[in-house]
Image (cartoon, rainbow, N blue to C red; front, side, top):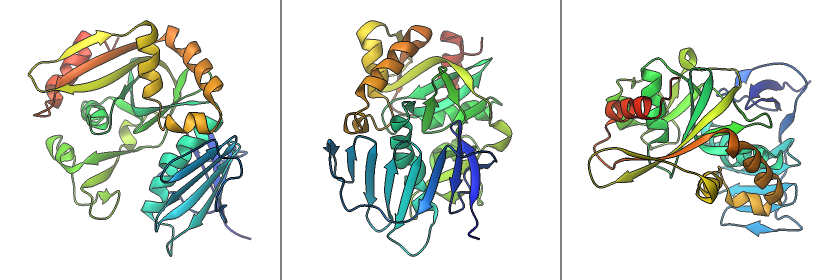
Length: 298
């Protein structure tokens, strides 16, 4: 009998043909099955496509050169065709990133491109453009004994809760050094990349929490911190645009589902645009500003 592995992540029970050490071991009837197998060369009824992906109703195909092809179907199955000799951290990186992102959209969930932290009895998600400091500020709060639910992708379920992802964060070396979190045992997420995977087991919260705030981080070339609470169409468009892999939504024919979940969520939460200096990275000061001005820990 072929050995399989069962995990829980993002509120889903996941059965896999191969080991995914990033995820937490679980049991139960699987919601999603991941198999090593074939993937189509192209989809039949493509609605949208990019350099690395094709998307159609209930189907998604991602090809990462020299790593793997990922075929995601019906929100409950992923087939991985290896383009290298073995399943390694690079294969898992794209599985847990874009392939999972497509899976969440197929299931009508809201994946936000950001990190979720527990404050009080609710969750706050930090989002924004790549490199703006989403994981960095979440890691700062971890260093201050707060708990993280997810890094990079924060999934909001149909009950408007952030569901826990898995207990690891991806952080650049300079942030790890600044927070005194770096040690030689940390593994690079890809070869020759100074970004590392940080386990946060003791500071990981593994139960769903209602979403209270979404904070969009921006940068500026001047000192000081600023914030603005968003409302109306600006609030809607800002959260929509920070959906993880939003460009997949149209191709997967999920615009209506996506609109409905945003329409349900946005009246229940606050959305803030927060602007910080581009450099230096003042994590202590930024974290203190967020806690005091936005009353996060109330």
